[in-house]
Image (tube, helix red, strand yellow):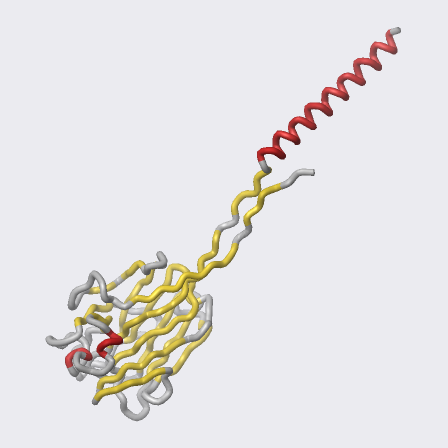
Length: 238
């Protein structure tokens, strides 16, 4: 009996968070980042709903204002949560609508959440975080946030922080953050997710001892067959 060593594909999970706190400077464009678990994220912003047209930018908390007022969150009671840097759409004009954010993952993820900053608290304003199983085509889940419906909300004047989570939803390859507001800049921060890693199955190979045993058995069997044939031939001659 031949024994084979087999390793089948399996699913493992690694948690990661992107907080933009290390290795960045004010107004630095951000296209791609490598998370601590090795997953590669691509960022863009734009006015559409199925992908951005320009990179997002890093905004340093405090003056000069490069994301939103007052002072990019400096002095607010959620400053400790956002740290020193956030990611902004860089639309510092009150006459321009804020851009939408788009995130793509090289490897699928689950347990996605994100902090949304300065989505104006006015009647009817909201933001929708949508998850896709591909590149912004096939929707697999969404969450709508507003000053009263997000998981966590804190605010100061016209500045707010909303945390939106998609729970244990898995198989996510891209995320869109679409707001229906007009504001002079927004930001996102503390992007949290769990990468779903699928290990590749290895080729089944016989154990070394099995290979030796099988070869020995085949060789012995061949020798015995040859010996029987030789004796039969000799008896026929006699």
